[in-house]
Amino acid sequence: MPRPSRPISPASASPRPKASGGAVIRNRARRRLKEAVRLTGPAHATEGYDYVLIARGGTVQRPFTELIKDLERALAKVHEPSSTKTRRKS
Image (cartoon, rainbow, N blue to C red; front, side):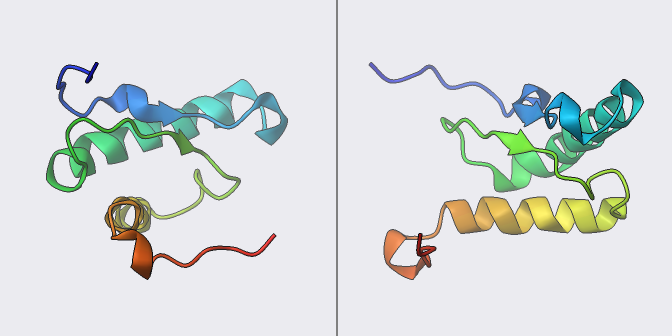
């Protein structure tokens, strides 16, 4: 059964586990990701898909404009046809 359509939600953002720093750092990373999704999602995310974002160590230090560009690139790459995606070798 297909999922009902819903707008892209900032709830898509997911902070990194506790090992990445204290609560202040994790919350700052979560807020930055949520805002990036709020600004980028409507134009670049595809309706009907769920996205999971995991904050890495540089999420808090990265300039916000670069964070937005990273998210735009990631969303574009996710929806590329399979033949153009490169696979990592294990």
